[in-house]
Amino acid sequence: MHVLCCRDVTSDLYALSQVFGILLDAGADVNAKDMHGHTPLHYACHRSWHEEGLIPSLVSLLVSAGADVSASDNPEGFTPLHLAVLCHYDPNIADIMLVAGADINTRDHLGRTPLHHAARRATPNIAKRLISSGASADALDQRGDTPLTLAARAGSYKGAIQLLKAGVSACDVAIEVSSVILS
Image (cartoon, rainbow, N blue to C red; front, side, top):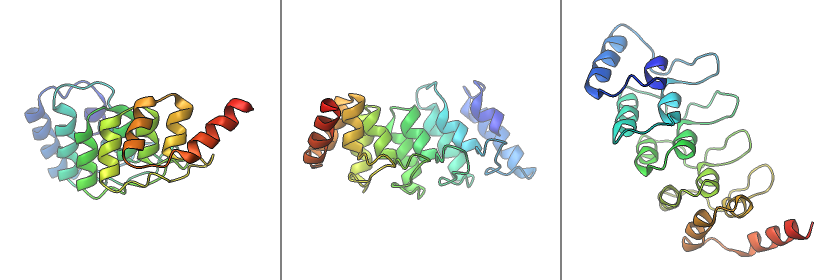
């Protein structure tokens, strides 16, 4: 399953679903982890390519087969939701994770939530979706950065604007950014 999710062999979703069905019927574990702690769902969410509608369909297929949307036993502490935010601009992939029960405020090895990554990567549609789903806009990472301060540090103006439109206070980021500039 890992190989199917990380190679460009998935252009035919029907064929892929047939192969997955055969593997699952034969006892394959949809939550099996490789030597890096990644599950097939991690690989599907990490895909850097995007064929129209294919990645959300692949992710849905894995989730419907029982894939754990909270799996995070990899060195980075990334859950499939973190990877969906980091690697895609399609909010539907994050939606699939959230509907399946993913923790919207889960943290990676740097203490960053999916909203931190959405703000930093200038993915305003995903940031908006995460905020409307209850993501904590004032969560602090290990450096003490909120999603807004991280967006400001990264020069992610679209991400910062989306957070400000959602009502996040600009006071903390103004103080933080001015101290960085003055340092």
